[in-house]
Amino acid sequence: MTENRRPRRPAMLDPEVAEQIPGDEDPAITTTTAQTAARALLGWSDQEFGQEQVADLVDVIKTQGVDFAAALWSRSGYLTLPGQLWRLYLLNEWYSRDRKVLTERYEAGVKIAQAKGLDVPSNFLTRHFATLAELFAGEGCENLPGLLKNSAILLRIFAAGNADAQWIESDADELAALVTRRSEALLKTADEFAQGAKAAANPEFVNP
Image (cartoon, rainbow, N blue to C red; front, side, top):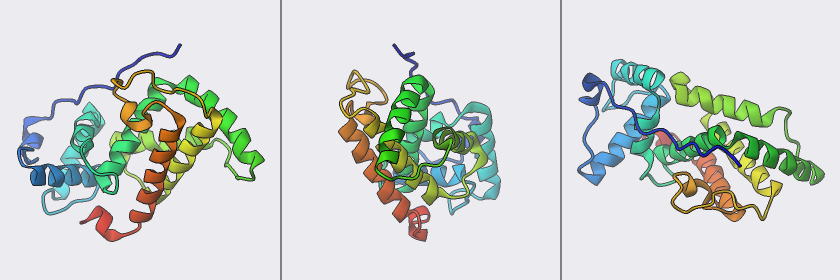
């Protein structure tokens, strides 16, 4: 039985930083806000946030966590920067909650992948989640397309580890959006990461 740790609720923003972020009454504003928060996490300014505001927001993420930004990304399409960060966030939360289970599935899946000729680097699992931890701690990401591509590979390894596993027991689980309970859904999310990796090579992906 794994620990049933629910993802943390979004943290409260400092009022001065919150004033810099538009409200979400309008869907267009919500989209812009999600994009701005996603770019800020990566250390990039835009028309909404200058470098000073980006630095302030990153400081909030480092002290309070990334949950409030993730809440902004949750309604974004998968072929957008915030949509991809939302999926990375869920993947990272899932590993934090069910690390033992995922490690077991990974070890089983790697054997299958290697038997099929796939070269999986040593410590791929731990290095990948160390990179995610740095990203969501506000430390940035040097290679976003590579991170998304590796996330796709990792989910396919998880799926291979136990094709019949029911990963999430309830559709009401807050992480069900990522895996929707069975391995075929992992493959669907893996495909979304793979498409995101290709899209991230286009400058319009991060600056639409």
